[in-house]
Length: 69
Image (tube, rainbow, N blue to C red; front, side, top):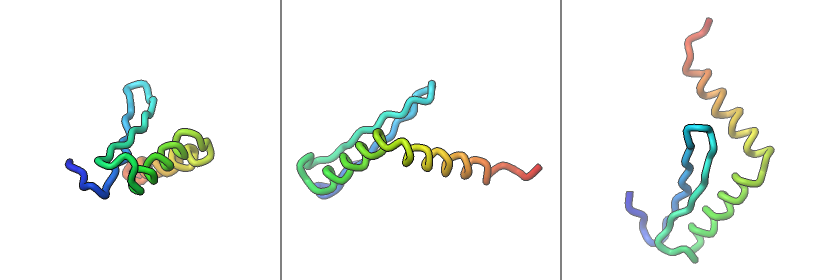
């Protein structure tokens, strides 16, 4: 995927042991899109309540795809 000059990407990587890393890629690291992605990355890494809410959403989505007992 190639980014345009006014785009930035938030990249999440999950390791085999469940660790999540966050990276930001952008052509213009000083641009608004990059600044927004960096702010989101910081929020993701430091906000335990948000992390919990996201994990609840992920787990609910995984269970929604399972057949009912």
